[in-house]
Length: 125
Image 1 (cartoon, rainbow, N blue to C red):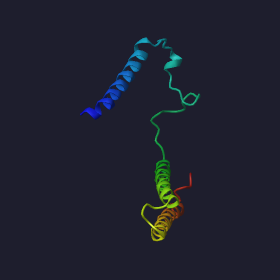
Image 2: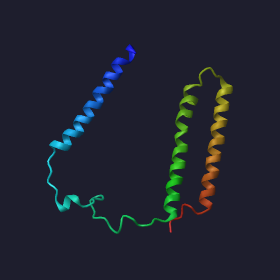
Image 3: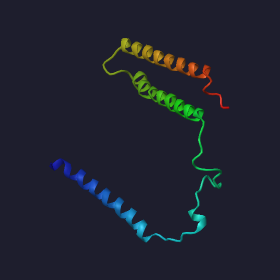
Image 4: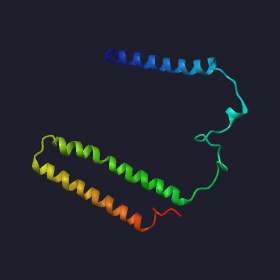
């Protein structure tokens, strides 16, 4: 238990500091509510329409596709680190395997991109 004492003390201090700052700003902060301050704020413009509007399914499809392709490209970072930094304990055979593995991964990603493009998911009507 003794090795964890400094960590637990630091964790306790962080929690106390956070709670103290939040409580202090809540109780000691100025309160001058007005009608203008209570209105919703959206990028400096008054909100147009209702907040409960229905969005097209295309909007959600494009959002999900962005997330999928964005997350897939994040997998390139650890691969590039290993490939260009040298695989631990591996030789040229390991590097060749890593290159082929990433080319297959990118080919599958490209096929998915072309499929979505041909289905018209990127056309905004």
